[in-house]
Amino acid sequence: MPLELDLALRVGIPVLLVALGFFWGSFVERRHYASIERRERERRPIPVTNVRELDRNRRVARSQLVSASVVVSVDAFKAMVGAIQIFFGGRVRAYESLVDRARREAILRLFDEAGAADTLVNLRVETSMIDQNEPGANATSIEALAYATAVEYES
Amino acid sequence: MFVDHPSIEVSNLETIPGRTIVAHFGVVTGSTVRAKNFGKDFLAGLRNIVGGELKEYTELLQEARHDAVMRMCEQAQQVGANAVVNVRFATSAVASGAAELYVYGTAVEVR
Image 1 (cartoon, rainbow over the protein chains, first blue to last red):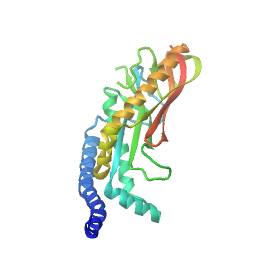
Image 2 (image 1 turned 90 degrees about the horizontal axis):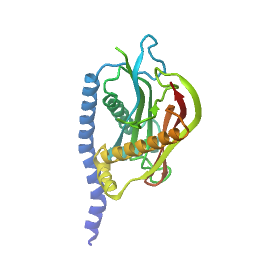
Image 3 (image 1 turned 180 degrees about the vertical axis):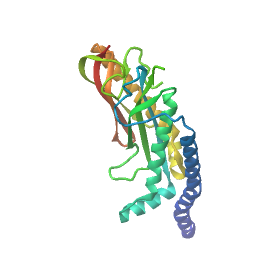
Image 4 (image 1 turned 90 degrees about the vertical axis):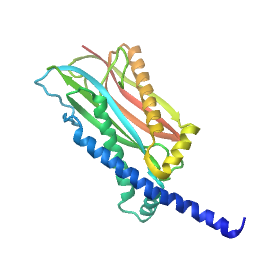
């Protein structure tokens, strides 16, 4: 293979992937944020708390553990920017929006799981890296898990 | 429905709302280790370029977590409980490409 072609491929393919990540990735993120914000406005306005108290004046009809989760991946552009920000230290904005989207998505799905419940109590949210291939490597995707006890009161 | 065990009630509160705990049976646990498979990994590899949700993994982990919960409920049933309270989830990457889903709680009898 001629040297020029070899060099062009070695440099060109990563640049192409990062560019694809930049354009497609930011489109995917904007679309996801629009969807999250719309669903947050439209969701049934039931109280959600992370305390373990119930309304003592009402009798409980039913309760159930509900959980919802989502795995969200970074795009090639974010991964590159994130790696640079991690190298220099400080705030890593590239990853902030990733975890924010994952958590809000998981909580929104929890509302869908909750069905006709009157309230969600003891909400817990956790985040984990599921595809860390070698120790110390940067995550390429994260899982956000939300769970809570859905309570239905007697009417 | 997430927890569909026929005879065990589950909550992450210290009690089952509206019920009274009459007996404790100690901690019960359930766990499962899942690895991603080749086909799903390939799709996920493509997703890592453009970002967004990895639906295959979301489903894989939810199924795995459901299995872990069912194992915990079976254990609770064996010790004579009818509910599991104060349930907590934990996820850890145990090896390259494999995750453990762990769930634990206290088996109790409620009335």
